Length: 305
Length: 305
Image 1: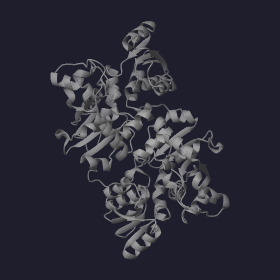
Image 2: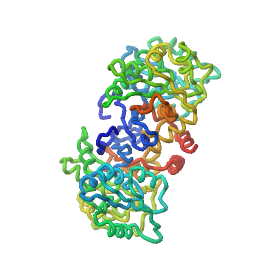
Image 3: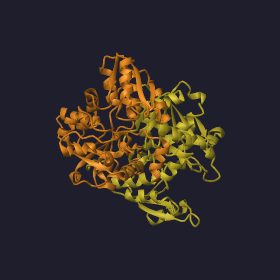
């Protein structure tokens, strides 16, 4: 990196002609697979590490936030501890360590993530406990993407973003609002874990009974966060509920027609378009492809199904 | 595409931290997998279509040049005919047709590509017969990438490019020269089809006896072109000869550490670094990843081997 300071890189905007023709849409992809650490999560992680005064950051993550917060903490000379289940894929553990994070492996049959985080917080009173989504710094970090989306010329009629804990969606809504954009924001959530869609319908925060069973591992959240919920309720036009087979098909389409390696969660937004939702017909639509970190064995299976 | 004129897009520059650490190199990737039609070939195709006065362009290509010239001709309102073996993968035939090209399928047991091109040239005296590499317009089209590489700050010590017919390598050399750059250019060629490396050693143009057997299908050329050869002889520092297993490993590394879907020919330049050539140690090195068009079934096999 030439000794230069690493900062979040802007999204890569692509207009894949064959994919647009295939879907008969005016389609743009906002790609975060080449963001540092391979997903948009570097944006909020960077914002957290840059802004908290604590010399140590602790987070629970078996996914992209773990790598991102480890990398961001190293940039700002902070310690970082990432709590991960001892069943995590070795490549994910290795990635956190390569970015300089200490990995704290737990046996989920013995202790929950939350319990271990409380223990670590007690042991390290100087540490900041970072949530991957339910944190204003996370929402503000993700708002940088919203501002980039607001700068599109011509402007997008609609942006589609995956919804897990609501960190990205709340951030994109916030960033677009801050920029005075009229672009509408749509969520895309696995049908198998449709707590956010159910919450919007009910007008109150509803949680899944357990961690949802979906290949979109970035959206296996019990519910959206307390801080995220009012932003989503105010700013989301709707949430599309995506069946698993559409997620797989979207991964395949991104591979074949856009040369993109996307992880399943990253393909949720494109998957939302496959059912040709009337609200998006004839519109200029931007799908956020949030990340590309997926193991070769999982990806081979996705391409082959 | 909003009715805007499509022009070649600049290369995407990536500095994949984990890949650089893995190889212990100051590594930059210049990525052409998101170029229009999925490979750098759109640059020369566009330059040909923009500059020849003929209303019709004819080319023989079973690969990326076929898609690229079809797409470029449509932009300039020209007819395009692409001669392809009748054994070509259906996805490749479909791609040429989707970009508006007429596909002329031939049975190679009955007629050679060259013979069919001569027939078509006789039938269509108004047509321009486009070579994918042995053409000054192709070299000039590829020189646009050389000029982009020359603009890197800090400058690259070395650029590594795949060598097939020599269109890209001659173009990159030309573009760097035109910009007054001191960046050195290295070629990467499959060991199984090392005609260009043999030519450099012999000081004269040497051809393979037959189409080389390599997974890098963009480098299955009999020899470099007559126009390309003097440029390569003048401008290439050396050509690395890449074993097949290194090509596969490079595809896997780009997948795992850079989230890049590269085709085998596109991974040749990174494959050259796996043997840690002394000429590149301690240098700031840019690898050109030339294209990403590879079928799912082929790619699955590459990831799994």
